[in-house]
Length: 117
Length: 114
Image 1: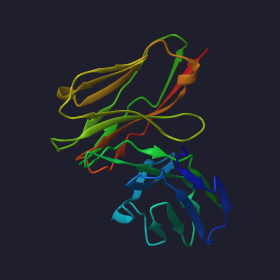
Image 2: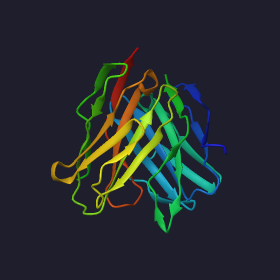
Image 3: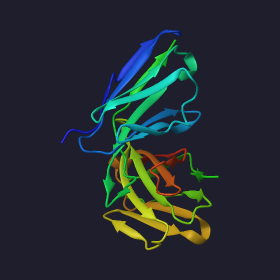
């Protein structure tokens, strides 16, 4: 089975440009998460969706960040305008509900490494 | 407040040595879940284990074992007879109320030297 698929794997852009990161979760998974990983702050949850509905976006740094999940098989994380401090690895993850409860077992993609110059 | 502390930033061991990675957590929830994830050099995080707060029984899976002690709010991870392939960053995480919102520690980088 295919795992969580993220694109692009690497993105280098200039400050002020729009960045769109994409994620295809594992088919049948009910939850989708966007995390950001930096050396300084570690792994931070940005936002997560349950059945395509955003549940908690309190981790989104500011209005420059937005995330959508138009259907069960696709999500985007957009940064507009990008800034150098947004440089990080952005992970998408998905997980299941089992016996009516979230499992907490997250399946991560390989990440999108973003560099903003 | 929810917090996960992994005090060991980096550990190096020689192959075949045993190594224990420490994890201390803080939460006010009575029902919570603890996790360990492995991040190999390829970058993606891989789930290793999930424990709920009502189950303090230690678990062993091959060379991996986990020691959960509520009294000390710790959930330590031991690798027995370490191998080079164990080299990775290991993250401990807390889901404070089963809502699938994981708080990760800062990770411990383990290097196993051949």
